[in-house]
Image (cartoon, rainbow, N blue to C red; front, side):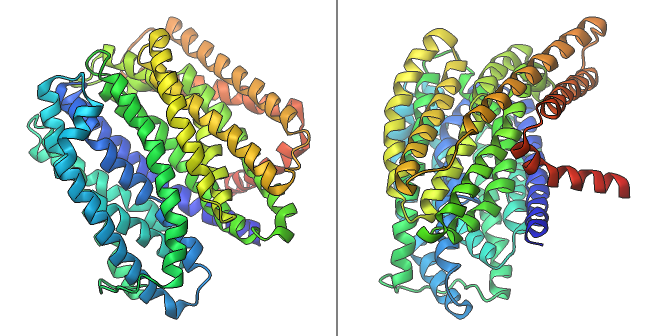
Length: 520
């Protein structure tokens, strides 16, 4: 029953997240059509990074505020939740309000640092847009708290669906008020964040999870516990975001349009990462917390191994398909309006570099949450500090050889290093991990992924020779056929390999698929 419940939960979260990502993709398609990789789009990508980081991480599912609330609220009686949440909301409003004021006044400095080689026109537009989005600092914190407390009440759909409101606000702003004025993008994002917060309030009030009342009991033990978890976690996330600013700094020194290409490629990578993160990590987080006691560590080690292996089974072939088919994927999604074939090629190169790191992104996030469950939030912070220096060195080195793609290859490399450091630290913390034989299994999964990518690439190019017609529908048909070939090779590889551990993890999913097929 527990496994079936976990699958149902994953299905609800996954379906809601997929719908949210589809709308987000439509949003970016409309932005690409209207602005392409012009100066206005570049300015928005400079300005949006910090507010967008806050909305995604502080205000998002699996973010530090969300995780801290789940950890703190989940262990308390329901009648104590409302006063605690009102206190946390008050604390967040005050602290993040100071951050918002700092963003408004510090916008010229922040943009000047990250876009120092961009034109004066782009810098001025970016400053204006960052100031418009500054209030998102407060909204992001409140959204993250609300999502966390709703999760403790077993309300999972709203946190996964509410980002749709943000995307729809941007779509509406561009379609009806755009007129090539990129500032409308900033207004759309701000209004969308406001809607995400407002939509939570009625459900929280109905469930007795707090109101807009101000409370100042900041010395409460639970509040201190929340701060002790969220502050280092938020600091670690902020330091990780500095890597994004490092990428933008080097992007400003390359040709015009690279910042926009980074932004468009980022959504294409973050869409599957977000979906898989919600499906795999949200159900796993409570399990990690339940197994944090030393007497439960043997079971915790098994859970960590299973989660790592599940991530690799799913993500490695997905990454291989993405790298192999990056150019036609970007072309099919974005290439219309002011988004040219040259923009597609540049974005595809950046996209492929990010796709290589997908398995490391998800594995890193999972390992970080294990440390949160164990009450250790400072170690991920220290590893993030190391990552900043490494990313700086790799960015400078890789752009010399790979151009814009070097920026995302660097980010993938930093994520891989973070995984290694976290695994080493976890080994020291738990005594041992019980990962005997896992290296061979992962190597075989890697070989299968490479075969998947090569077969999909070969199939697409063969179809392009046989059927050289261009246009979105022919490209989509060829992509579908090539992906089917690649996935078939992956399935065949797993069947021939007959690894018992992989089969054990896949069998519940396959049974559900066949059961639904039989009902259909």
